[in-house]
Length: 228
Ligand SMILES: [Zn+2]
Image 1 (cartoon, rainbow, N blue to C red):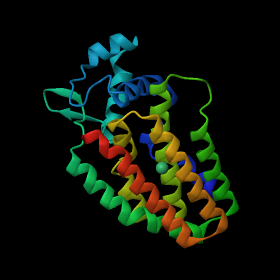
Image 2 (image 1 turned 180 degrees about the horizontal axis):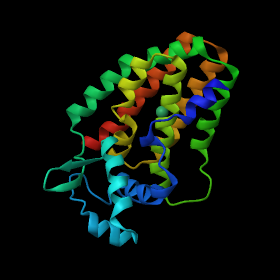
Image 3 (image 1 turned 180 degrees about the vertical axis):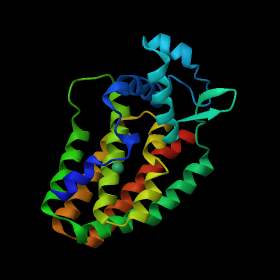
């Protein structure tokens, strides 16, 4: 119960309010699908017109996306899409993930409850089969967010708030998924998540460490081709 309640306290950046949700989702999908290219200006009035809304929800959605690192705001210039990561930024980030996430998966085994495991199984299953049939881009950008939640849930179960917030603030998943559209990325990630869940089910800390390490290494190798 405690865990389920805690889940409701996701940072606001991961839980759009119903008022601006549609606007937020619309802009988010355009950013993730590169329909709004990295570095491109995002004029509020144009966007509001295209989405058929007033400028207020657009501003709110953009400031939320700014907190997630997907857009930038510059004085007197306004909003633009965040620049694409360089290969160096990407590689640094993966070194950082490999330092923290496998160890956190090991810690999570020690704190795993039946309830926490059920929650993880559910988010993994959600990733596998989205609800209504949607286009590829929408499915992909939803997957990015679901993957972010899945990994964040593991960090919460691990119970080390320093590790969790440090990773969370990097908004890793949104950026890596913006790098590339690839169905292979999602299919293989699902299989790797399944191995991770198997280790959690078995209560095996070393297997959890190894499964997370492999998942992140493979994710890095899949996405490296975005820089070629
Ligand atoms: Zn993952």
